[in-house]
Length: 100
Image (tube, rainbow, N blue to C red):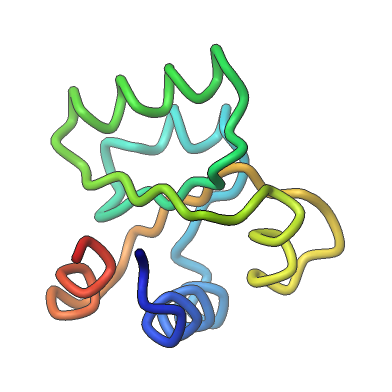
């Protein structure tokens, strides 16, 4: 289970710096330049599979949350559903804590 404080801090920092990409199609195309991909547990079939495959192919850590896309959207401060977010800038210690 992901530490909620670390998750909140990482997402808040990404939103502040603008070093993120939202949405499954956009995340799939931006995986190469990302440090980590965070996905909702309710990630749909084909899109979810594509996100997983791209992350694995590019050796980018994938963190699947126990939250749905509406809850992930709220965590990001967005009034809509967000299935996946790719973060381009994250500290190594935060990345290790997210993966634990």
